[in-house]
Image 1 (cartoon, helix red, strand yellow):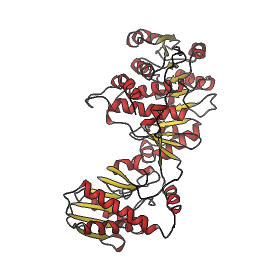
Image 2 (cartoon, one colour):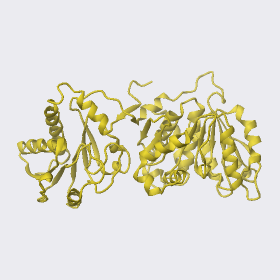
Image 3 (cartoon, one colour):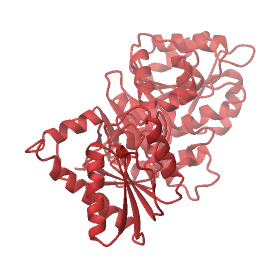
Image 4 (cartoon, one colour):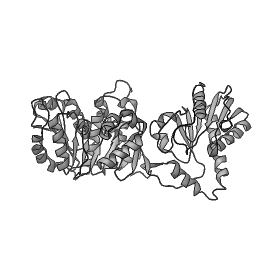
Amino acid sequence: MSDRSAFEPLFTSAEMRAVEQAYPGYPDSIRELMLRAGTATAEAAMRRFPEARALTVVCGGGSNGGDGLVVVDVLRAQGREVLVVDAKGGERELGSPDVIVDALFGTGFSGAPRADAAALIEQMNAAGVPIVSVDIASGVDASTGEIAGQAVEAALTVTFYARKVGHVVAPGRFHRGELEIADIGLSGGETACKLATLELLSELPRRKGSDTKFSAGSVLVVGGSPGLSGAVCLAGEAAFRADAGYVTVVVPRSLLPPVELRLLEAVKRPAPEDENGHLTVEALKLVAELEPRAQALALGSGIGRSQGTREFVRELLKRTTLPAVVDADALFELTPGKWRSPVVLTPHAGELARLLGKESAWVNAHRLATARECAERFSAVTLLKGADTIVASPAGGVLVCEEGTPALATAGSGDVLTGVIASFLAKGLAPERAAAAAAIAHGRAAQLIEPQFGVVAGDVARMLPSAISRDH
């Protein structure tokens, strides 16, 4: 096992303030920290944009504005031409800079900027030159990643000591640009949110010489409906590629022939279906017979939304004693219940919106809050898909994974993720860690595909062994 941590802290504004207050000599030490922060920002700006001779530094009030004034001093000492814009004094003229330094708001900002500040942010974004943000792009809530109004579009953000939640959770993550973390002498601090890293894959159980195909991880995949047989095949293949030793796939009886042809290694079992080829509650008996030889359940890939299927899903989740990952149409009209075993829900923004009775736009604007709300309401670990995959626990903890790539925006990608989570659950990982590790493996597998063009979900599944087995 690696000695490097599988998790990095993601600080909220309050958590970061506690770290600063614990620094020796606080509050008198604030000036010392400010000098280090401003110097680090100026040096990073000069490294990143060495040809920049003229810079405009936009300073707000408070510590962030103080950091900006230190930036001014350091830049001028290095022979740069610097224009200072005092936002709190109502100044608006940006001049003709090569680079703008954004020291308008800091990590304590929340809500929407006032009209005058919003106009200044718009002016900075429209200047057509790179912006370097001090600590976090102004307008982004550092504690949530939410943006309630205008926000700076930074090319580079220089933050201090550690990442903030708003650096990695969307929509804030899309405003940070490159992220540089500067050491200014702070230490310690506890956070509710953590960034899951590639090191988490080093913790995955590896097969031992004494393992059988069942003890290596046995997964039961249930899903499929007419026109969607590929989804259940992708989930089954991904479970194998994520190192499960045995996979059983339950599909409607009429789907057995195409699934037999597409998915060679899995055991296939035909289940009762209605006149339209969808699973019905009569399939519960077959699943119950198969459960004793499985260690995890993957439910939902391609399952469809018929009334009988919805009844089947609800009853199965009430009865099963297997840890379960629930995806796709199995989430449709899902109601909170008392689960007999751990449940992992894997919605995208639209599915989460339906679960919570909200609009997709609301979920996209409040990703952290809605993932937490879902985890609490459904008493289930909730994995909200996205470039910033969020894994929220009913107990309140949050893991964020950012190994994704735009190549994952392809049909069937979610089914592959479902299979990976099920494999990791079958290997005995706790639900939160299984979901986070699967998101990392899934994203890493997609990154390894070359070229990053025309990627399909099957490509991601086939790269999983390389992603998981690499030295980290």
